[in-house]
Image (tube, rainbow, N blue to C red):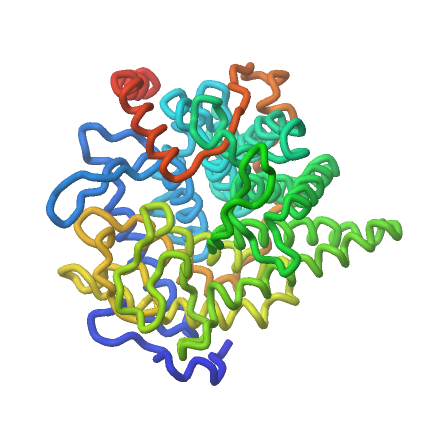
Amino acid sequence: MKLSSLFSLLPLFSTARAIALNVNDTASVKAAAGIAAAKLRALYPNTESWFIPGEFGLIQTADGANDQGYYWWEAGAAMGAWIDYWAYTGDDQYNSIVSEAMLFQVGPDQDYQPPNQTLALGNDDQAFWGIAALAAAERGFPDPPKDQPQWLALAQAVFNRQASRWDAASCGGGLRWQVTTSNKGYDYKNSVSNGLFFQIGARLARYTGNSTYADWAEKTYSWVKGNGLISSSYQIFDGSHIPECVVSSKIQWTYNAGVFLAGAVSIYDYYLARSPALNTTQTDKQEYWKNETMNILMATDEPFFNRNDGTPNIMRESACEAPPPYTRTPTCNTDQRSFKAYLSRFFAMSYQLAPFTRDYIMPRLQASAAAAALSCTGGVDGETCGLSWIMQKYDGSPYGIAKGGVGEHMAAMEVFGALLVPDLKLPNTLATGTSKGNVNAGTGNDAFGSSYAIQTGPTTTGDRAGAGILTTICLGALLGLTYWLIRE
């Protein structure tokens, strides 16, 4: 597929010291994705004495100070990104890392609620591990040993846990951000938690054919729209507080748009696969979800791609990246530096499942990947990736040097790999996949029991940081003990 004339401002090849990328050449794309994957691997601290599988730990900044931790959810997101990388490229050198991490972090009830995350657990945190497990099932990632929990069952366990937290008593429904009442933000119902629950339900419906998952997905989406988190023009806002139940943060993030897009396209494909047997109402649903997919997709353009600034179709995190002339250092925090990875990931999923999205998606992936490659000129090797692709050069991003940069390199790896999606086989369903499921996983009626906490409310970034500190204080000793006990 060739670049359109819109991309005349972007060279097909990056300049000296950048990651060399020809967006029209498969070998070049795989090589670029491989460099970003290796950069991400170099940040995975499995040689440290304190290492816990599935955690990235602290960021070491340029001055050598350890001043910020990577939250647990981002490690789950990274495992999902490495699954994508393997599916796109066939390179399996990181598969053992992914399998170890994803099986280590399942927790005693095999639902991605490990004890060392209990006090700081958000629904979105748990869900990112759940969608990694779901991706493993869909992409045909090697199944765990038979005596270990299986990918599909793990995704079902996450879904069932979260369905049990549906909060009809406040704002008429939805999930709160945080799982436990002690966390600040328990009074917040945010887009990403509800969007991920919607997406998991939609993808499980597509994978299993079970209409209960589709019903939950549609119920969640209807609540989100009714609550105003998705506006009439399909802007996706961050969240609303209880008891006001009106949107209190109108910030738009790339990952929120991506999360809902993947859910919409999955439920569309669920109905499409059943079209010969659909009644009139279900046929209408197929058309409805096709329209919703395009509405969400088209609404990504102005905030995240085209701002009439002479840089067409390059993805940017507009809420925290500098505006034109792109000379100010981005203000994105550790979490936000990874968000473009998920919009890239879910653009690729949409490209696969809905051919009507392709003319919109591929030019934006190509332009973004070319710009991302130009951002990867930092570090002593000239291949460390920055945050702001829109600058088309390394931005000196403080988390992109020393031992930071998980978000930056995950995003680069995902956008490079997404260019290979035209050659990727469709995600599995029960008819084509090998992963074993358990519809009762996570309900207390399965083989693993149940000891989950009932959610009580959402959190803000500051709240999450506070919860993380509290967890560290209360569970510092338990972390090491838990690790060694489980490792044995």
